[in-house]
Each structure stands twice: as structure tokens, then as C-alpha cells.
Figure 1 (cartoon, rainbow over the protein chains, first blue to last red):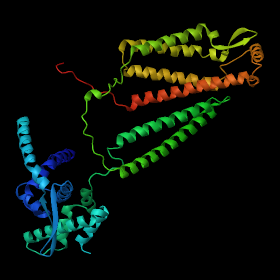
Figure 2 (figure 1 turned 60 degrees about the vertical axis):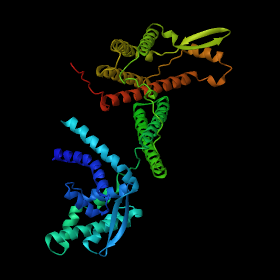
Figure 3 (figure 1 turned 90 degrees about the horizontal axis):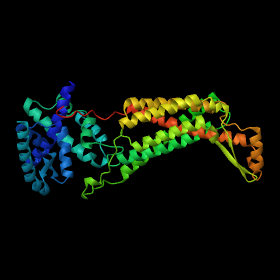
Figure 4 (figure 1 turned 180 degrees about the horizontal axis):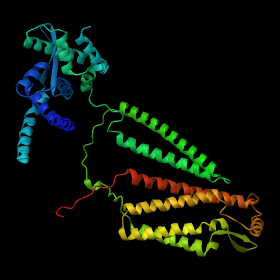
Amino acid sequence: MEKNQLLENVVLEMRRGVIILAVLSKLEEEQYGYSLVKLLAEQGLEIDQGTLYPLLRRLETQGLLQSHWRLEDSRPRRYYIISPEGDRILPELKLEWTSMVKVLERILS
Amino acid sequence: MSLVGQYVTVVGKNLPRKTRSDIEAEIHSLIDDMLDDRSKQEGRAPDEDMEVEVLKELGSPEKMAASYQGEKYLIGPRFYPTFILVLKIVATILVVIDAIRFGIGVAQPGLTTNGFFTLFTTSLSELVNSLLVALGNIVLIFVVIQWAVPDMKVKSKEWDPRSLKSIPLPDALKPVGIIWDIAVTIFVILVFNFHTEWVGMGYLQNGIWYWVPILSQAFFSYIPWLNLIWAGTVVLNIILLRQMRWQPLTRWIRIGLRFFNIVILYRMLVGPSIINLSTETLTQFRQAMSQAPGLTNLQPLLDGSAHLLVALVLVLEGVELGKSLYQMLFKKGEPAITQSGS
């Protein structure tokens, strides 16, 4: 039980940074929170809503995302999209990620 | 109000007013999307059971609200080191003040064993009280600073590792200090065993300088015990000189010597006076000091001074004993380092 909890915590730590990269790359096209959850889940990255929504707000505060409310079928939805600043750093983040993967593969092999 | 509405309201109550309505709307929108999705999957209209399932999946409202808040500090990492530093300085000042007050109290002539313990417990409770008040005030001040001072940008000035001050090893010893201790202790042994007449006071009468010993017979009854402590101190210092660092055994020996010393100092305080002046000396001294009429009651004055001195040494020894015991019992030692290849 304790060991599982420990493993879960470490996995959460590892995923934290990865999620930011995944979210930024998927928000090159406009998405609302739930559609983004589904989109990422379809591609194999399950994210808890309690993690994603605060993350979206944080990234917006940091200037990496932009958002606006839109009424669809009489329901208000908040749409997020990558900001010009986020767009600028995304390629660099992707390069950094590729490099990290290579380094870790070398370390773990 | 629906279950979803209640949930969103409770989440909002746990959020800052500034962002509350926005986050509430977003969570409401999320729950509606989840219910829609589930409704399509299960081919039925959303009902209370479905709402319960979705809300369970989101977790308790408090947990949901906490995920938006991030970590909150009463005193954050920015000010924590300064807070600890201030706390240590203030605590040290309070301990010193209390120790001095205790020392002055103990130095009063005619102190009984009961009086000593009453004074000790009163001082201790006053110290605890003042430490708690100081802690509360310092925490309050830092909470206000934490709240009032906006986040500071970290200075990007280039840092030079050579600016680090060298930190001495906690257990390392310097030979000069040990040799000095040995020399002083041997000098004390020689004086109190072979030249007790050196411990006294001088006065000038009719152009002639007089020197009179002042130690009483009561003091000499402590000499065998004091000799044991002094001899023990010399032996300990010789061991330290060979090892050049503190080890658990030597630390415990020092604690033992201090404790023994405290017992003797306490006996001196509550026992008969360690100062004694003969009637002849007193008369002569009064004549010599006739210019200073305030010094007619010399014996009580000397008694009081001796008491004060013994009390101060007792308090200092007590503080040192407390520090040594704390270090031995509560401070973890350095990690064991295994040499590679051994």
C-alpha cells in the first residue's frame, strides 16, 4: 500500500512536466477543458480534471495560453488556445524534450 | 438547488473571492460536459445517480478547490531563513536575560534548598512564557511581511563559489585552545592546593601594602572534589590533544565533569560562606578604608560578591551542560562515509 502510494507520487512528479508540453502542443488549436481531456485521453494521456483545469489557469497566468468564454448551444464554455509567447517557446520545449528522451534512453539502457 | 449547484457553491466557498465566480462557472461547464458525455455513452438522460458518479470522479469540493489554490504558506521559503535567524537571536537574548536574573536571585545570601528550587521553577516558567510570547509576536510580524511584501525577483548577479566562508568541522578542535585549557587548569590546581594565600584582597595602610587571604575553611572542604574535576579536565584535554576531535565518549566525560562541577557549585551556594575574614583583618581594613564609610560591612559585601560569582558560574555551567546534552541526545551526527575501494 505504502509502496504503491510512493510509486504513484513519483509517477505524478514525472508526469507534471510532460503534461505542460502535451497541453501546449494540443492547444495550437482552440479547445475547451473537457474536449482537451478527451483529446489527450484518446492519444493515451489520461489527465485528472482536478489537475488539468488549474494547470490551464496557471499557464494562462504565465502568459503561455489565452482564453475566452463562448456560448455554445446555450452553454458557456471557456476556450483555451496557445498565446504568441507560448507559440514562441513550444518549438524549444519540443527540442528540449527530444534531447531529454535521448539522454534518458542512454542512461536507462 | 441541484446536487451539481451545491457542489459548485461549496467549491467556490473555498476559493478566493477574486477568482471565485470564474472558477465556479468553469467547473459547472466541466460537469455539464461530463454529464453530457456520460448520457450519450449510457443512452439515458442525466439523473441524480449520474450526477453522483460524476461528482465522485471529481473528488470532494474541498479537494477540487485546493487544486486551484497551490501551496499556501504562513511564512514562505522566501522569509523562512530570516524568520529562523530572528527567532534564534531573540531566544538567545531571552535565555541570557533569564539566566542573569536567576544568577542574581541565587546570589542573595541565605538561600535555602527550597528557595533555590522555587527560584529555579519560577525562572523556568517565566522563560517559557516569554519565549512563547516572543514566538507568537515574531510569527505575527513575519506573516504580515509575507502578506505585505510582493514577490521579489531573484537577483541574477553572478555568484562566485569562492565567496563561501569556510565552515569549521563541528567536532574538530584547535590545539591552541586545548593547551590553553590545560595550562589554566594546572595553574588553578597549583593555586588552590599550594598557594591559597594568593586568593585574597589587598589594602594600603600607612604606606604599606597588605594582602590577606579570604577563603574560609568551608571552601577548603570542597578542594578534594574540585581537584577531582580539575584532574579530570586535564586528562580529558590530553586525550583531546591526541585525538584532535570530539568523540561521543569524550563528550560524555565532559558532560559528567560539568554535572559534577554544578553539584559542587550548588553546595557552595547553599552551604556555609566560602569567604572568611578574621576580626583583626576586618578592623585593619576598616581603618585603611576609613575614607570610604560605605565599606564598613565588608564581610556581607564579600559574601554577596562571592555568591554572585558562584551563581554566575553555576548558570553558565548549567547552560553549557544543557547545550552539551541537547547536542548528544537530539542532534544527529555526521553521516558515516564509506571510502570507495575499501
